[in-house]
Amino acid sequence: MSSIIEWCRKLATFSEEDGKTTRTFLSPPMHDVHRELSDWMRSFGMEVRVDAVGNLRGVLAGDRPRIMIGSHLDTVPDAGAFDGILGVVIGIALAEVASRRPHRPAIEVIGFSEEEGVRYGVPFIGSRAVAGTLDAPLIEMITPALRDFGLDPAGIPQCRFAPETSAYIEFHIEQGPVLESLGIPIACVDAIAGQTRGKVVFEGDANHAGTTPMAMRRDALTSAARWIVRVQKQAHTWLGLVATVGKLDVYPNATNVIPSRVIASLDVRHWNDEIRHEAVRQFTSRVNWTELLDQPAASLRVLDRTMHSLTSGAGHDAMILAPQIPASMIFLRSPGGQSHSPLESVLPGDVDAAMAFGERILGL
Image (cartoon, rainbow, N blue to C red; front, top):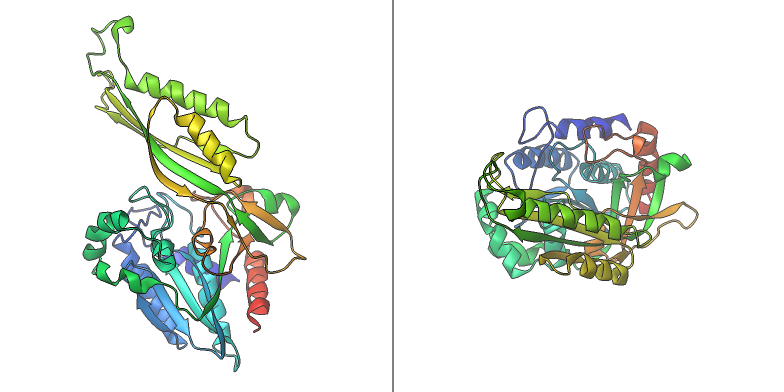
């Protein structure tokens, strides 16, 4: 459906960086996204609000139990136009179709304020607030951002999903090559891999790069490099495990100074939590490790057993809500397997298939 794709591309222009799509948790361009989507939802009768953690929420009344449809509004740096936002736009489009039907479920469309974990290094802030699992230390950490955005953190307990909510559905691009390789436009997600995220700190001694002999150096970056290679080698010993060191902070970060300190990120994922935990234990033995996230794997409700189903290696808001309410995901094919990249795209026919599936599941 070309109009949905056009909406996503328009919203991608609201960015912190010129010429790129970068929209982190409660950054100024999020106001623009809220405005555009709020105007659309109000145009066909939805009640719209922004909750205390910055989630955009629109509710369409109905004569059947409420179904929540959504995804996230934030992006990674230099992102594509569809990760997260496509699920919100499809949700609104389905609510607009429902608004023309005399009998329909109540529909709540939610655009989560944060899922990627870019700004604070911890993901799922928006959906955790809705699930009631946003802990006090994290609330304290994000409070300045909430206040700068015009929000009151005292209202976070009221972010919980309404008790009449019967299910959560999330439409999302696959972010991988499987559906394209199979020639399938959409599929059900049966599970989401668990995640561990954290950081490792390596300490050394800063000194002059030209006058310090190699045998007399304590180079923190060299130690970090050896550890990274060890993680990559060990990760191959567990089938299906993925481990990524994606970020390094090097101090003092000068070409002619031996690094004295390095902070390295670590992201480990597997659908079996026991395997993931054992891998993390081995990766982080003998290093200074701080865990920032231990997100269990989640089983999701498959809405149509006749459809192809697959497990998601990427984390999604659905995994946060799944322990609380029945949660389902529908993946749309990602051409070229591209995501977290400006090359990310979606096919109009696949969007049509997702809309048709959504209308059928909602009884429209």
